Length: 228
Image (tube, rainbow, N blue to C red; front, side, top):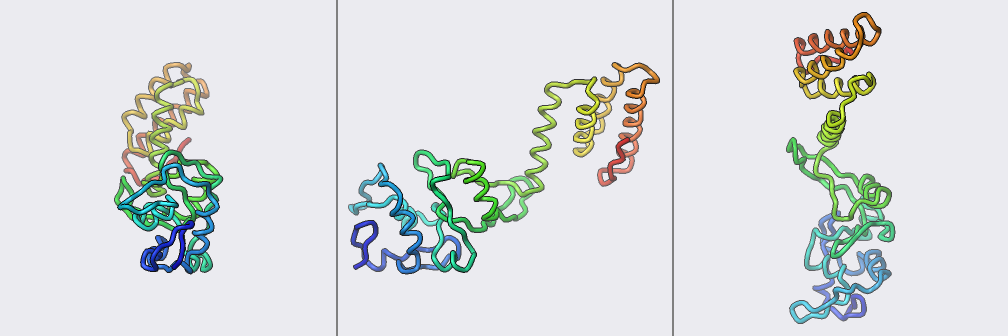
């Protein structure tokens, strides 16, 4: 009878469904995963469930909570469908489960509802390079994520306006126009124009921007930018 972390289990209990290929795998087909979890220190939250001794928290999660633990069978790793995760470089806490393997995940964007792929390379960058919490995940597609960053950037800029800073004014106007907020762009431009003398290079630059705003509003949201 095979053992899991020193505990004898029945052959039926050894079957785990690989979250990468979604196939049931026997214990001989996920030896890499076993080596990974056996190399980690014992978990403090080991206890009993349904009268059965839990000797390894991670294997129990893979067995009884499929989809909550990211690991991959040996065939997926050998075929290149998944890559090993370095748990020692991941930022976890409390009952969060680390990523023993990375594989492409299909997700639905929270904003636009379109399907997108959270690639294994991006996952590894998130959890091992940027040190994001292991329970964090991508909820927006790249396009919507970029728009959210632009909205956040615009909010920060408008929270502390500097109407004399032309580079800052240019960035604010570009962001406002990208969101189709022509009225707000004209209002910000008017505040900035008050601070420069008529005939100055800065005043002419702002005048040109006003003409561009009007032209883009008439042309519609698909018009290419024509910043002066």
